[in-house]
Amino acid sequence: MTSPLDAKDSAAPIPEGPTVYVCVTCRKPDDAADAPRAGLLLAEATAEAARGTRVTVRQVECLANCRRSLSAAMRKKDSWTYVFGDLSTPDDAAALIDGAMLLAEAEDGLLPWRGRPDALKGGLVARVPPLVLGPIPEDFE
Image (cartoon, rainbow, N blue to C red):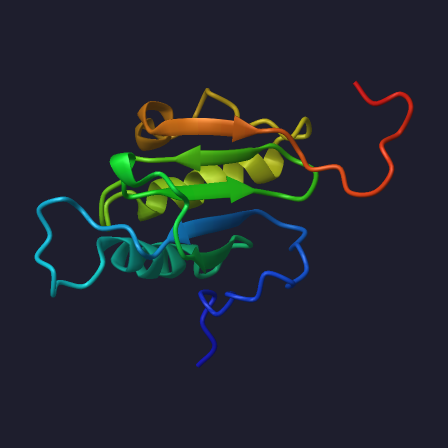
């Protein structure tokens, strides 16, 4: 069975639809050393929540947000990228998919505040502008 988590290839093409990146190396401070990584559990729950949607879920190894783990990010082509922390397992998996679907519908590439799940309101770490690859157009602001 192919999993939407099988995307550790950084050269993979950017999907047209929304993508959620879940840090699989995240753990909670009180997790036992031999316990499964909470980030991996969140990634698996997010992939399950994404079934039947157009959201792609990818695993990443460290979003460098360890003080606010569990962490995830979301983007779509030509949109801003949003990084979230303080997520829980697996409770916030559905919130990540709901947020990605909101972003998918946003014509301006910005994740709307209205309708955003609470976990994505309080857990916002950063909003990163769209990447412009190649020559920058003269009228770029």
